[in-house]
Every structure is written in C-alpha cells, then in structure tokens.
Image (cartoon, rainbow, N blue to C red; front, side, top):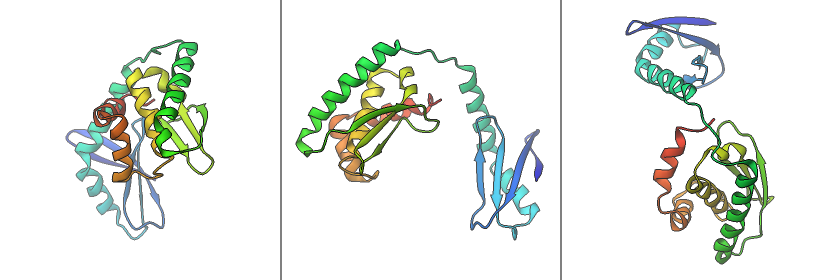
Length: 183
C-alpha cells in the first residue's frame, strides 16, 4: 500500500507492507523509494507520524543517494593491473598472517552490492568485490586484511578489530572513506 506524508514542504511516499514483525522497519533504497514494514496492529496514523519523525533522516538519505549517482566512478586500474595487484597482496597478506597458522584460503571475485568482501571461514574461501577496481591500493589492502582476519575471528568483535588494527592501524579512516563509494 502506497502512503504519502508531507515533511518540510516535501512529499514523502512510502510503500507499507504488513508483516508479522515486532518493530517498525524503515528502508530507503538507492532509487529513493521508501519501504516501511509493520505489524497489522500498528495504526496508519502512527505509521505516518513515524515516517514524519524520520523525515530528516529520509531527506538526507535521498540527498546522499543523489550525490552518489552524480559521481561517475572510473576504474583506477586496468583489469590486468588490478588482478596482479590483488593476487600479489593476497600472497603477502597470507605470509603476514603466518603466525596464526591458517590454511591458505581460496580467492574468488564477484560483483557484490553491499559489501567489499566476504569470508567463508569454514570452507576457507575469501571473496572480493570486483568493484574494488574503483578503490585505492590502501583500501584494497584493508579489505584483504579484513577478510583474512575473519579466518581467525569469524565475527566483528573487539578481538577481530585488534587483529585488523595490528596489520592496518588506519582501518577506521579507510572504512569511512570507502563507505561513500560502494556501488
């Protein structure tokens, strides 16, 4: 069901889906559509006021998505340069992590929409986003280190970040820089 509310002179349309959920869930998609899911017991008036209450957040998200769309990203490397660099850094990182006595992981590439890499620590597979070709070498290095650290600590606990910071002390700054370029 499509609903509309007015906020600071802007009409915010949202698609309401009724689900068996405990909380009201709000999602803003890159096409600037707004999705709200809520339990059927929550009144329409309450949901409209909820969306209005989140108005600043929604409008900022719209602005951020529009900025991202207007920036044309160009690859920083040729495919050969990218693959040569990544495979070299992957080998180096494996050697650096030698103190942890981990098996050498398999490296895969694929396009991902919401993450730079993933690690299947059970199968010992690290998958990197092909879109890293748009990133700096420092950012690529961070992602490789991040995924290798998951072979030791599979979650994002303090222990995990202690390992990451041991190999990449600037990881917080790098993560912040990368947040704006995921495509």
